[in-house]
Image 1 (cartoon, rainbow, N blue to C red):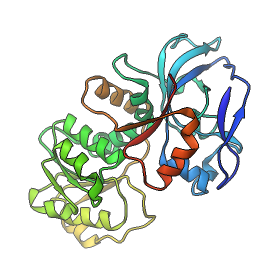
Image 2 (cartoon, rainbow, N blue to C red; image 1 turned 45 degrees about the vertical axis):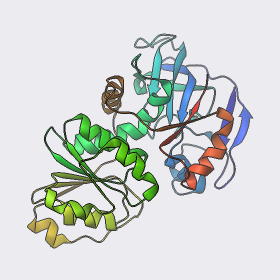
Image 3 (cartoon, rainbow, N blue to C red; image 1 turned 90 degrees about the vertical axis):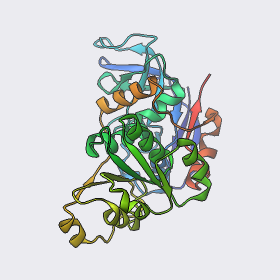
Length: 312
């Protein structure tokens, strides 16, 4: 099979021919129909988080959806022909073992989820990571419910999904985004409020603010803007550290919590929301051959939404 292999920091991905994977007793093989490109892939290549990889060389790609083409002898939850997604995990394909930037991928049965018939492969692929991560921030740690006022900082791939998820659960959504080029996307979404600075919504008495940017200053602004007793969820990691007013956190009785990747059940919940038509990723579909080119575009901030390599 054809695969794009990572061979070393700052080295271009190499197109290689590998043997088709065969499943172990508790594994399945998936014919890849869609593979999402993620900022984590950029960070694997540039050395930022390369240490997380199980080995080098390795085939990257941890946002994967496709069709089961082979099953191991002990597999009883899936059958050949099933439509499946592989939620991103540090022990799964694209991180610990060869991933989805290939024609086929092998994965443990326990890591796989079903894709509803109403969900396309190109929507399912980013749901296994980006949408699931946004769901964890909004629902699991943000505890967003109907009637709440929710602030979203950053309206990129994750932030736009987070805003949709918050609305799906009945919240009023206020968006802060400094990038003027993104404003048309925000207007199409139709938030309760839109500004470059979340502090402009201080009078709105926001119940929850989710910082998808993570520039340090954005976290500090969230602390300024949140209502007394409110909750700030930190998921963006553009900066390693931030200077925050402990006085405000204490006197306003703010809950500040971090959110990370997500779990299998959260991926299933996101796929259900997509099937119901309540959320969608903004997709830039590309060909398998364009994966290295578009990783470069992703690195340079030239992608609107999520780039997904789609196989007919």
